Each structure stands twice: as C-alpha cells, then as structure tokens.
Image (cartoon, rainbow, N blue to C red; front, side, top):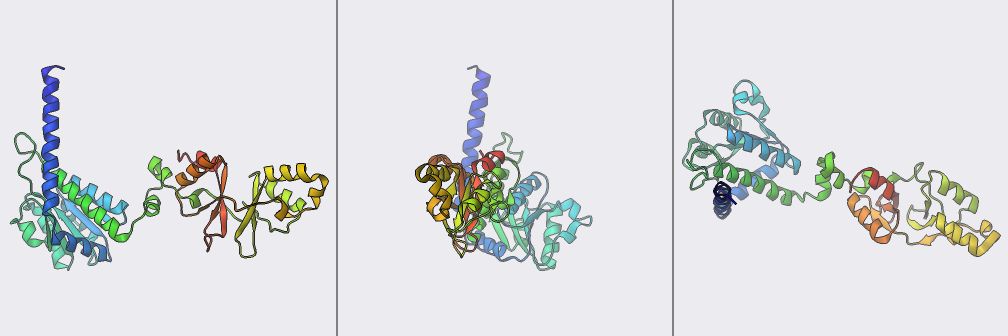
Length: 328
C-alpha cells in the first residue's frame, strides 16, 4: 500500500475515533433535562417542529424524518422560510426543536422567540450553553464537542454527528415510551424492500368469505369438493359455530380418505376428512414470520387467526402470496 493510501486510512480512522469519543462524552452528559424534554414531546398534542440553518438544518431534516417514521409526528421548518410567512406552521400545541451549534443563528433565534410568544415549548441542541438559544430554550441539550474533526477545526463535522445522534436518542427514547412495535414501524413504511419485509400477514392474506369459503364438520362430500376447488387454494378450513378453526381439509386429505374408504368416502362428512389442529398464525404477525414457518414445516399455506379471538378464522396466507409480494 502506498504512502497516500496509508494517509487516507490514518485520517479516516482518526476521524471516526474522535467522533466516537465525542458521542461517548455526549452520552455521559445526558441528564434530567433530556428526560423532561422527552416527556414534553411525549405529552404534546401537536407535532414536533424541527428547525436549523446550514448544516444544522440538514441534521434537523434527518431528525424530523426519524421522529416521524418512529411514531412522533414531526416536520422540518426552514428558519429563513419561516421568517417569510411559514411561521404559521408552528401551532400552540406543538413543540419546537431548535438546532444551532453556536446558539446565535439569527433566523433560528427569531423562530424560537415566536414559539415562546405563543406558548410553545422550545428544546435546543447547542454546543454553547451560555448562548442566546440556550438561554431562550425551556430545555437545553448539551451538544458541545472539544473540537471539530476537521483539521482546521472549522467544518461542522463532530458537532453535527453529535447533534444527529442526540436526535436519534430522542427518537429511540420516545419509541420505547410509546411501545412502538415492529407492526407500527411496518405501518409507516409500506413501500420498498424494507416495507415489504415489514408487511404483516393481514396485508397479504386471503380473507374468509368469498375468497376463502369454509365448511362445518357436518358438511357433505360434494360441498367440500366445491369449497376446496372454488379458488384453487387446495385447502379449506373446517370451522365451528363461533368461527373457531376445528381443522383443515386439503387435496391430499381427500385423496388419502378415498384410497382408504373407497366409495364409502362419498357418504362421509368433513369431520372424517379433516386434519385437526392445523398450523395457524396471527393476522398481526410479520409476513416474513409466516414464510419462515412454512419453510420450516415444508407447507405452502397457513390459516390466519385473530378475528375477535385467537382461535377464530380470519383468512389464509399462502407461500405463493408471500413470494409474489417479494418479502424475501
């Protein structure tokens, strides 16, 4: 490896180490103000409005996006645009999240003062705890760093890393406080590869009814055949009077009974054909979990339950549907 390459690696490694130390220092400084600020956001009836200018603005956009995608309603407000008519975005039930490392950015201060005038709580992330923004805010989160990793100590680098991480800390703390689940996350991320992997079984199942006919334990042979062939699913559920799943009849169950009983099978009812306690999965489960269960059991479908009861039939999910949705 040549000298230039070694220099690149040395600079990069040093940058990461410096920023890692800054993050550790920020973690040790978290205290009661962080908890109080988190509680204010959690109890807010409105949204979190995030503002910042320059690099702090880019950080603010990311923080706002992370909050919104993890259960905390949030938008980003550009402070310059705010001063030209967009201050109306901030409503009395909102919380303002202001970011400025030096704490003296005029536009951000003006937005914060407006928020204070209308009774909105202001949370600040700043590296200067004696700054105007720090004094103006209701809760000031310490985003200070010893120095920027920039060799000239000028370009916002370490400070922006710390500010963004503090935003992530808020998002995670609020997720835990809200009990934000994988299902909730999936609901907010319906598109793309991530969204597909977070789809729930209910998103892909064939619902009971027209799409998925069911039979009772005393259904006769001809009606069973009609139900099992209606949509070519190759399986039909057997349900009780309250909608609970009692068993399942597959194409294979019919063939095996015919081989064993001969023509007598034509006089039998569903109870004689069905396999009891078929494999089931909850409608709220992730679709990827359904895929794993089918793969492990070497089957091609699962009955879905959860329609008012953990045993009640809600639908059917098939391997074909999971593959078509590209969840794997």
